[in-house]
Image (cartoon, rainbow, N blue to C red; front, side, top):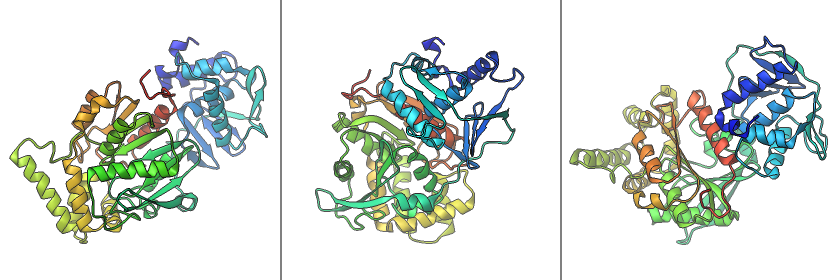
Length: 443
């Protein structure tokens, strides 16, 4: 395969080409258009980009899935390392250590490891070979099912700790998962412990902590952090992020900013480019609602929303619940709006919510965009009712070399049963798998 026709030509093209290659070599019947490989309790469906283990669909990093697919499709021979590099990464030059890490992850997801090598065998000096016995069958027509989150199990794996910001405020932070780190900048409406119970956040935690260590923390005034901080300000938010990553001992890491956490992540990346390997911005903004208001009517709307938060936050008022929750999850069923209202009351007080929202609406990082030098991925719902898509466009136009991925959703907080959610996870996996320049500059 020509290196220019590699992974970035499109995953569908890769899967179709891989199956066609297998048909041409006799590995598969030429009439088979959808293929499943079964071994033990594992099923790999190469055409639908689906891996099941024990009857549960697992989220797998795209490059890891491609490694598994290529090896099982070519299981009658040793696959050279150069062939895997050429097939998976195309004309993007990566180190052998990158391939080695994907092989390790591929073994792990199918219950193998480097000692047993019962599925993928290392042939020293040559490459890798698939050694497990497989059953080849036509793929079923059923729609892929999303992996059900396992909040109780993952919650037990979480480690909650506390650190102290420079002004003496206690900040609660947590780590969960194993692998390279991903830091999520804080935003409101979170609770490190309760989030695992909440249908609003648990699929986010489950998805983002697969094959990596997710680091997150509760914003001051929220969740398990100090409930009554004197200083609630943008500068304090940035200092809290600085405190947490230093406390965890991270030198260089991918940083994610979701919604209100986006400007904080942008500010941190501008101040500390040498610390940030990748920047992921999800449903966020350049200017808060009040900062971007250009007419008296827009300013009045921003002020009115803050006042409604102050008055209605702590009340079990159906009208407020529908008004506020629906802006975050426009297409969610009413039960989720009720769940969101419970989450609001569990995470912070009405007074703190009012103060936090006032800071958020006044945020403005427009002057920082040109200073961002780290690889940046921007994901934004095309019909996001909470933060307009044009804010994502403004981010993309202001951050040099960034990539904007529109998501087909109206939900500011995506739900696990919508296609946009799996699209979101795949894009993040693909982006974080890219090797970033060691000096933080663009290649």
